[in-house]
Image (cartoon, rainbow, N blue to C red; front, side, top):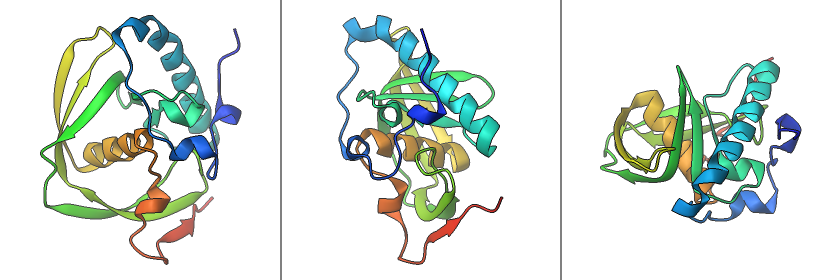
Length: 164
């Protein structure tokens, strides 16, 4: 079975990127393993090609489910995430995205939040996040809502090409 990869990542403008995803159902849990394998493979190809990538959301591969795959120091599978206790304190950064890897977008994100989700064993998890992890999960969560960071740009001068 050929894994989905870099060329399967939906690009800016693809209509599925603007759709809200449906929850993963418990009976779909057996499918999650293959979905995650595809997400992992696509992320590894992005990392090799563009030298970035800590997370990818399922809809970026056309899987319209509330599933996020992170790989920071280890793989983390996030099913049906919910964001809680978003801080009033925010920070500004240049955001990147696998769906438009050469474009950076200046956005504002919450500095702290609490993430509630189910893991790959369908167990409830809670994670207090701050700074770069908070930003990362907000970016990936937005994908599940059909929101791209281009839609969160601070102003019309908040776009630049990645330096090669």
